[in-house]
Length: 123
Image 1 (spheres, rainbow, N blue to C red):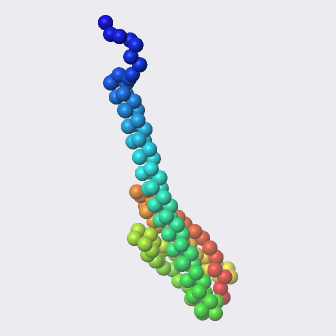
Image 2: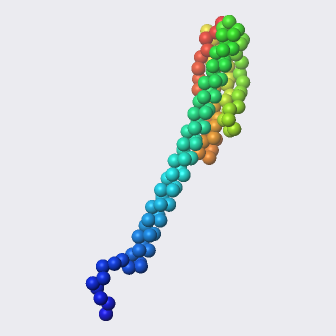
Image 3: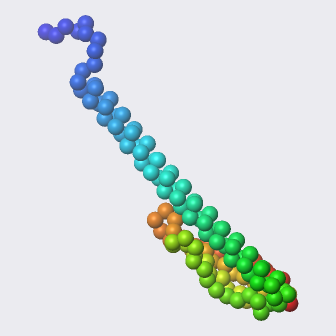
């Protein structure tokens, strides 16, 4: 008969503890990978937003350079960093032009698009 006075861990208990620890480490690694992907997607969205600001600034600059004449702005597109782009459509409106800006960028393994609208007063 075995002596029950020993107070150590059995091999099975150690293996179960090691298995639980391994599952925890794998879960932490998966969470970290997902967080890194989300951070990269956020950076690409921020890059697309900066591209939108640049496009709108250039449209306003074109208006200023032409004395505020509406003919200075036209529809177009621009490419930012790889995978990021902008397309804008200009349409006449009372007192100026409406700008519909569509931003496209990769996000979490798929293509995303955001739409912005603004008004440019012109003559």
